[in-house]
Image (tube, rainbow, N blue to C red; front, side, top):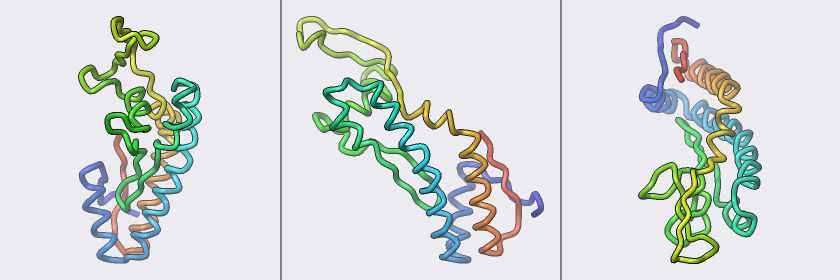
Length: 160
C-alpha cells in the first residue's frame, strides 16, 4: 500500500465512516478487532485494580470497569460511577476526586473530623501503557485490513 493516508485521532472517525459506507462487513470486522484488542488490556487493568483498590470495595468496583468498542474506538469505561454507586471508587482511584484531580481525599478511619489526602493510584493507565506498542501495531493492521476490504487506497500511520 502507498503512503497516501495518515490516520490520527480526528481522521480515524472519518475513515471509519468511509469504511462503513464502502463495506458494512469491513466496518463490523474493524469493530470486532477493536473489541479483541480491548479484551487483552481489560483483564490486566482489572488485575491491577485488585492490588490498588481497598479489598472491601474491590469486589463491587472491579466489575464496573468495562470495555466499550465501536468501529472507530475501543475504550475502558467506569460504569455506575456516579455519587454513591459501586463504580465510583474505581473512578476515584484512577483519576482522583472531582475537586482535586490526581489526589484522593477521604476521612481517616471513617472519622469525618480528620481527613487524609493521598495521590490517586491508577490501574487502567498502567495496563494500557504496558501494551501500548502491541496495541498500536494491532490497530494499524486492523485498519489496513478494513481499508483493503473496503477498497480504500492509502496507508496508515498512527501517532502516539
